[in-house]
Every structure is written in structure tokens, then in C-alpha cells.
Image (tube, rainbow over all chains, first blue to last red; front, side, top):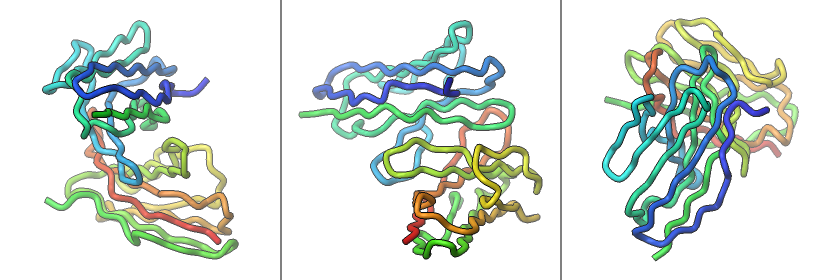
Length: 108
Length: 112
């Protein structure tokens, strides 16, 4: 079983739509959780950390369920500029593990 | 503040040669991670250095090696290059703990 699993998509949504991505992780010793965004042929950039209490940053909301080992990212009011690959990232004691990413395409 | 810098940006090598990739972390960061991202694939963990020590390595053959210098910069060496080593190699740094990691813009290695 992979350390971090994500639905690869692609998710094609119209501007203004709400879209949700899910991610599961296998290592119960995982300590920290993040969502990164990666544009085509660019390096990943930190979008937001994910906390057990859930956290929000503008149009983005992240949730963590430790019992189910599940992380989510919700994007409201999608913009064209949100088109990218979203990487779920899980920090275990000895490694930073990336999911393969979920591709999002926001269309006019 | 300068971000994570990697050099060179692009590198073309012949099969069987050796490649050396370099990474300078953000000032104050002591941990450096190396990742390989082959075309169409996710990031594969290569190596983690912290305070000059190798803390963990991913599932890669021994011809992938590296080191971290006293100033926390790091070098990744790939010996006996194979065609499938062609990929974007990314370096990330952090100050340990539960903080997000900052990535460099990568070195694109092409093996011909």
C-alpha cells in the first residue's frame, strides 16, 4: 500500500464551482500534513498546512481526520488560476511523503 | 531572504557518466530533502540530511548518494547514469518540526 494516495483526476470544473480533493495515508505515526500546489514543470509550493481542528485560508479549507487517516482540501469559488496539480503531503518521523497529486482544470 | 537555490538548472549527461547536483537551503534551515520527479510521475523521496547527517534514504540504488556540508548546503551525486535517471530533481529545506518545506526550482537532468 502506498504511503499517500490521491485520486489523480483530472477534475474539470467551471469557474466559480466548489471542488474537493481527498487523500489517505497509511502511516499512523504521521506527524504533519500539508497541501502543496504544483504548476506544470515547476517546483511544488506550499499551499497550506493541515491541522486536526481544520483550517481555512480564504477560499481554501483543509481538514484532517486522524482516526480515518484522511485529509481533504476544499476549494470554493474556483478561479482559472487554481488550475494546477494539488499534492497531499504527509510528514512521518523519517520522511516527507508525497501523493502523486490531483490534477485540477478550471474552465471559463 | 533568498529561497532554496539549486544548480545547475539543466544538466545533460551521457549514460554511464556521473552527475553532481547542488542545493543551498534557506538561511537557518538545517534539513535538506532530495526528491526525484520523473515525467508524469509523483515525487519520489531520495535522501534526507539534517545537521550534516543522512537521516533517511528512499528506495533508490546506492549509486544515488549525497552529503550535507557544515553550512547545510547539500550535494546529490548520481553515478553510472542510466537513461531512466532523466528527471527533475528537487531539493527542499526546512528547520525541522511541523513546518512546511520550501522547494528549490529544481535541476532537470537529461541522460542521453
